[in-house]
Image 1: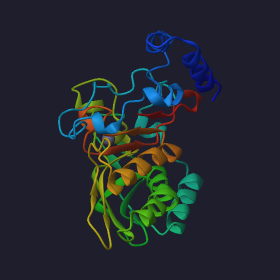
Image 2 (image 1 turned 180 degrees about the vertical axis):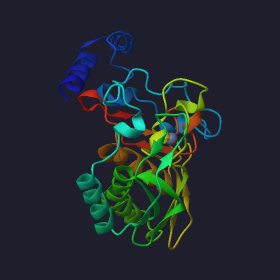
Image 3 (image 1 turned 180 degrees about the horizontal axis):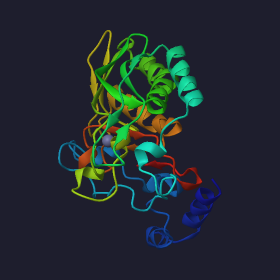
Image 4 (image 1 turned 60 degrees about the horizontal axis):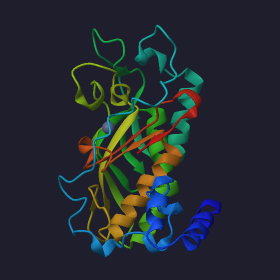
Length: 269
Ligand SMILES: [Zn+2]
């Protein structure tokens, strides 16, 4: 607020014509929060299809600048992420208490790859009572628990405002997949490789059309408001949130994961 007030005072004190240049040179003009209201572009001036289809802004590579994940050195990630008996039991109990439908599944171990896999996966069928996880898929229990908590605390209340009835399904594109980040041939493993990540493609509702995750920049709809709400709230539960406008690879889904980074860093783009 202080910066915005200062900008307004400067704008009032400067002759016309000098304002825009000085504010831009000051580095504040690009930030709407610090920009005088009268210089903000009106949404109506934008072409109707901006943000749709292939017009995503500059590609942002997966988090090179983010702090590294916190994991014991030397061990394969699959083993490093294993929960002890007590923690695993507590996770299963918490998941059950949230009304998730799941089964404990056989360990997923990729021969020859010490990183990929889930030692104690849960096969998640429903995130919450009446909210299918479609299709059923394996996750580490803490990832399934994060999804269930987020659904209860944020997605379900947001759906109440949407007016299409209760959420009946969360459609996803993938959970566990042994691969590198961004499907590259080498490099760091994706959090999908450990059952820590979920790619949400869309939501279905009891009394209305589904909402697919897609570029929706300023389309002015309740579906956009819902998508923005679930995306923003995702960062209160998950430590990585990527989606449309992050890069082209995430134009049609929300990537949520629970990687633990140094300093508790969260990467939400
Ligand atoms: Zn993903």
